[in-house]
Length: 429
Image (cartoon, rainbow, N blue to C red; front, side, top):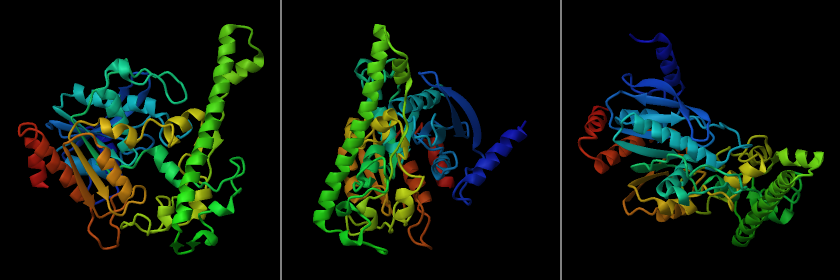
């Protein structure tokens, strides 16, 4: 008997997909499962399946809810079951630590293994790419060799957690990592972190004197070099600020443990200040399209008005604690970067990039592909923006092509027996 409530939920999610004409197929059912992580958190696992699939994929982002997303619909059309775990901290930069986020990934992979799937894939889109690369790096290590602490020094139970390596990995519009993404976009002209309006004119990316205009920018190579060096220095200063906060907290806890602590020590031991990081949308490549040219349009992921995206309330890493800054948003301290983690990949890997992406650029994608440690890697370029939308009005929708290529790649890499359902679904579509 069909549960009318379940049907209503499924219909509602289908209606939320970006491509209304390509929803999850009618014979694919949705179920929602509580997934218990090793450290005691409970997340939700949205699970799409027909019931006879042999291959399943985890699709996840460290800080976004991906159920109303195009990839699950395209993957299920290819006969691949999909688990979409909701991260424990949706849209929350204040507490996001990647060393804990990979425990969410572990819970989803374990769920699929219990369901009996023969092959499990990680399909990492955008920030899900470096998240999965980090998970895979730790999963392939002997438990005693896994990380025991976050960059802020917090203990994490990775050694005791069940971390099942995937059978294959697919990256779709994956970037360098949350930290490197921000470091490439942070505005280094900020003089005082307490005053978001403070600015060094010699480093202002939106000054006409430095090459900016209302229709884009033309930056001199010398300016670009100074700017990028200053971006690293700003991140280094923010790291120092975060580490000072951590040191004060650790010192107070040590005094409490040794006895004789004052009331002020007890307050300091619990104090976790939240600090803003302004002006984080100033990647020169978004405004000067001649730098590492691609099919991208003028502007960043946040839009084409830098006055809004750079100084508005919404932006990458806008509100952080020391712990979340060091683990997630620092391009110097975060463990979740492609450069650090991609070399550990030994499984078959498919790397799909959009030629009009405004978050990862040709030099970045080449670097990521080169870092992939596996010898079994394939690369595909698709005309589209970061979200898989057509670059120009009237261009064909690139998303079905991406889904089809993933289906073909899975069929090529895994056994005929495991993929009979996948091939039938692909041909039927």
